[in-house]
Image 1 (cartoon, rainbow, N blue to C red):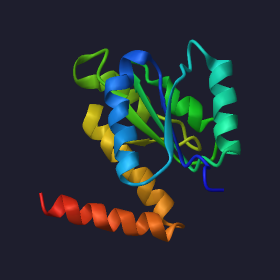
Image 2: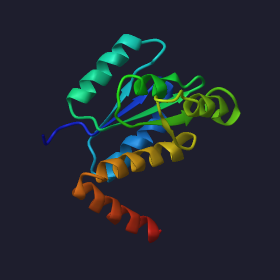
Image 3: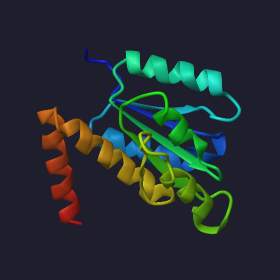
Image 4: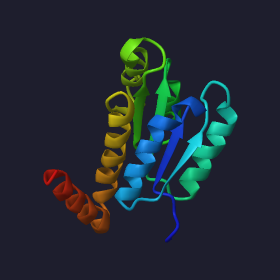
Length: 155
C-alpha cells in the first residue's frame, strides 16, 4: 500500500506538540509516513485504544509516544501491541523530566518500551530509531538513512 501509515506518533497532551513536532519533521526528512495525534492514556483511554487499532490496520510498524509526568502513554500503547514502542520523556513535572524518564523505563517484563533522551533531542532520535527498525525490511529506508547519516557527518 502506497499510503500506508508507517509511524504513529502520539502525545499525551497538546502542550507536548512543540517537542513531538520535531519527531514528525525528522520522519519527513527520512521519507517516512507518520502522523501526530493527541491521545491521553488517562483522559481518553477508549479513544487511544481505538486509534492504536486503526493505526495497526493502516500498517503502522512503529509507535512513538511523548509524555510528561507519569508518562503512562508509551506503556499503555505497548500493552496494546507487539509492534515496537519508543517513549519520549517530556519535561513537564519534576526538573529534567526525571518523573517521565522513570515512568517510561520502568515497564514490567513482557511490555517493553524503548526510551530516548528528554525533549526535542529524544523526539528526533525516536524518529531515527523508528527508521532504523523499518530499514531492517525496507531497502529504500535503509538507503535514505545512509544518505542522511552522510549529511550529518558533513555538518
